[in-house]
Length: 495
Image 1 (cartoon, rainbow, N blue to C red):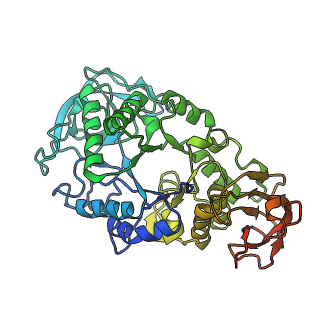
Image 2 (image 1 turned 180 degrees about the horizontal axis):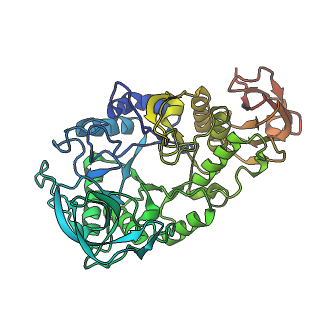
Image 3 (image 1 turned 45 degrees about the horizontal axis):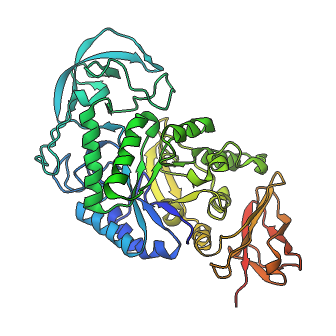
């Protein structure tokens, strides 16, 4: 069995000449070569600003770039035909595909409705700050461009628990919709702001049974239409977990298989929140280890960070079988909402820690393979130019993960700035086994055991940072080295 490796094949500002779906298809064979087993693609359906939006301002789940809606037939990423062709190209190379499912909200309603609401305290959404009054809101979705093809379901205010814009008042607030489902928000995993059900746009209400059935039907439709192999679930801490459980179980039973599901439960504060989500959903999803990302971010900014503690408080430390590890994503990249980008000097070290260890399933980030150049305004409104450079070591380590990162793991997290580990290799993977050493300070060296079966064998740094050769002694030990503020990956010299 080959190690699993994911890639997030986009970033927020993707702006290359090829649209994204065309780029995916063109890169499919290359992704296979570097050991990628599954690709997470961005939302493929029509958003509120069709040609420009990344896809998270969801308008029509059934429009994959097929209908003239919201100013364009294509989405930002391309057409329905190009999306399906991209999936086929990945499948032809033995690579699975994860569709991005945004179930928290809808945006860009087609018609206004007069609805009863109450405002809530934005810092405590359990506290009402007004009596019931009426506003006009864009809560009716009729999808006139699609004309009922694939689904005739019409969304209205009874499908939502809250909105953030009153069209008649021209005012922004958090408006709790007062309807037959209840006057407050749903119970969700996050109790931030008292109740974090409301995030943005028209908040979907899963107390409405018709909504649940429609989204279960959509799940069937998207699998049958595109042949995707799994899903990345957006913003799950804002969504009723009972719906998530029912939706996953329905798809697994319908297709008699277990889909790969990874949930975004963004948390950089405490691991207990993520463990609670695993508990209430019965471990049905993998979880992105945002806590590990945050540790990487802190370590990259603080030269005194104790590397012995890099995995402390992370999901991968206690639930490695359910942790999807990553260095950065589209939310944490520069100028985005959760900006916490790991410094470039530390990125190869971080990637070694997610790609070359037993624990967790790693997810690469598009700019680390392909780069990214863009401009946007910062929080102060100033224009900023950003250049994210590709990191060749990431591709090299991804290949090493696929071919050599196997067998027993021995850890040497015994020094504040210089840590390492070895993998003993196994019989199934020829020449497998490796030693990794990294230092966040001065040049590092460490005696580490890799195994007696390597006695007398020569090891070299696959990243090319160190030129010397290392010979394993008769007891399976050797002294391995790395440069200052760097990482070296020692592998068997072949030929």
